[in-house]
Length: 328
Image (cartoon, rainbow, N blue to C red; front, side, top):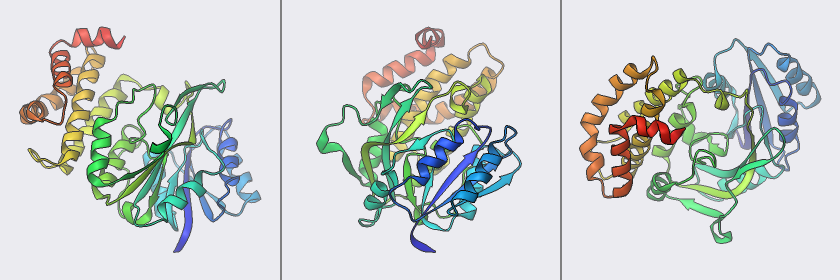
């Protein structure tokens, strides 16, 4: 195993108009000790052929063609083939800036660092920047060291909206050490796979670094997975997230447990309003009610969650029609 090699995993599915831009951005990195594992996840639009052509040009790139299995499971294929000491995921319709790998590698190799996160820009199809993690961050806070306790607090206190993006949920804005990933794999194919993977990484983390600099360019498309969410996806999003409860200790003072409860209660409130009147509502409630019964007192009594937030969350749960009006 090469101690300085970075394995870059790129799942590809029907993105022939964008995958070239993605691969070119990787090839243009100022850090060159890389292997790029492209997983053609059953593309039917010619994306696989574009990947084949690119691999003939640059021998650091290789492509694996497989039947469609979904984003998370395509990433698993990449993890099983990776030889590097470090792992980076890049979505095939996005791109990274030339200094991304060099900047992240310098941080992760500076000591005992399990992973390095970095900011991103969210860009629409016209090139307009919709949000930027870097914007508004004081210069002295561009580089943050995350201990387990501080990491949990940052996750719990993160106030970024959906439009701005949550830098702690995706996997594509992080460089991981192979050691911290170990035997972890994505458990779900398409919905909530990132947050469920990262949460288990966070529970293992001894020390991490977050760079509040936009090193990743996330392109928002109306035909992408994240922008074509159905009601079924909303239901599965919650069903998958709630499985993370098994990794936490009830009624503990562990901030990861508190962060999880805070996040899941927010999700329950918004999802109940969103699923109201749909065919998935009853199944959603069947999962929610037992969970709330065993955790609501713990949630209410937590001193780490602001009182106003608890009142707002519990009130909207009782009156989902109001929540639906607010969401619309």
